[in-house]
Length: 241
Length: 78
Image (cartoon, rainbow over all chains, first blue to last red; front, side, top):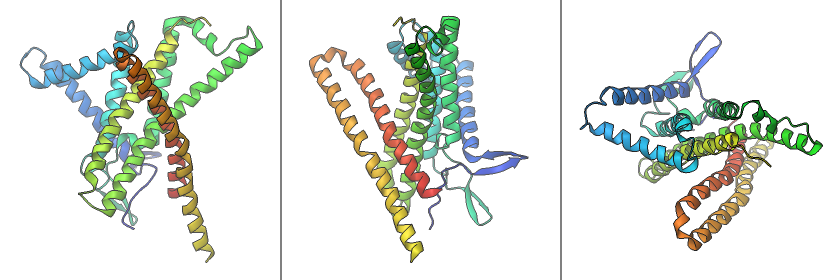
């Protein structure tokens, strides 16, 4: 069976107890790529005619307008987090489509270990993103509303309100799991689909599915960013029941 | 013989998991999009807002189908 599908990311090398996996490598490369683009944009800001600068400005402006359309008053506060989540998830998902990912690897103990794997096709990375996003929502809520924000969860005025607060607390953890599994499931299922199609009918049949995966990567990035933005809005809004 | 029956029933369970688990989310997505289309038809100016909320709703509904897909993949590959 020439199909190599592994649900967990395989470690490439280990430093003592810590195993460095192939998806960690790709996520580092994606971060490096985004940082280099940002540094190049910052350095060549004075030159007006640079095409790359205009392109990046268009993308950032449309992202900013999108954030503004959902939260009109606090767009400038929330924009860095939301745009970073969007760009990292999108390029991390698209990284799994590059030629050489999941195909170039090492031969270890008779098993084939790919050197690269899509960053968001690893449950560890999506779980880390989900925890960071929900933690940021709580921090934004605390910064805006103060200690009164935690009245949402711990509310002793009423037995019913106490129960509702408990449900809200559980719902936060459910949001973390939902974020992690939605992104992981979409991107990993896409990789399995591409592997199976390449196994059955190489090169030709894979083209529309790669197009589908590009679209799905973009949509999942949009959904992750939009949901984080909506939760931040809810957390920072002073709503009185 | 016993090993073959076990393998066959395991494959059957994997297929049944994803097949059953995506029936209701597909129906839910259809409902969401149909209501969104109705709303756009009634008020074409609000099309952008309705579209944004619709994409969000579809992502939530699709996530449930993705949960069952992940369970099927775990059963198959782990």
